[in-house]
Amino acid sequence: MRIDIVSIFPEFFGVLDISLMGKARRQGLLDVAVHDLRDFTHDRHRTVDDTPYGGGAGMVMRPEPWGEALDHVFGDAATPENTTMIVPSPAGTPFTQAVARELALEPHLVFTCGRYEGIDQRVVDHAASRVTVREISLGDYVLNGGEVAVTAMIEAIGRLVPGVVGNPASLSEESHEDGLLEYPSYTKPATWRGLDVPPVLLGGNHGAISAWRHEQQIERTRRVRPDLLD
Ligand code: ADE
Image (cartoon, rainbow, N blue to C red):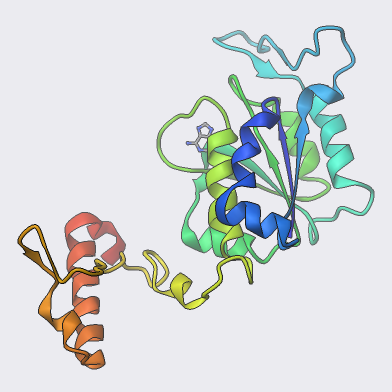
């Protein structure tokens, strides 16, 4: 999978060099390129923002550097079938495990990190005439810009790309994969600070263990996230 990120803080994405994402990049499973939006400006101050038409608080990102940056990362061959642009925004549709699974099947993802009050809407509208565009929100709260949201999305999507997580079985047993939260996990020692591991897990009866884990999933989901059971 190819991933392009456009941001005014390219150094932010150094985190994608470490742990599982870094390993996947070195193995060639994820081909990630980060682009500095300011490289596509032409003035001495490398300006990327301006005041909003119609007035109001804050600054809006100007369309020209975004247009040039996206021309560069899309190339001539981009189509709605082979390229998806993701615009992180608190005004987008919610990011879920199902969305991550869909996006993990795409050959080329382009992430646009907005700052300030957002990007001139024409950038998104013009891109939508060339590629598939999805505005996606990480949750119902406001971040200072798209960088943190994009990092979270890339980690959630990247680990679903075949080969990135060594043991694929560990993916299917996680929270949200079957619509329920994950069951609690335990390891040695069997007793720690007076707390015992649930005896069923020590008995070796796999049917009983599966049944207990499923009950735990339902109980935890009902208690913490009853909305998921509707
Ligand atoms: N940018 C700012 N807030 C955001 C959010 N909640 N989700 C995605 N991108 C954002």
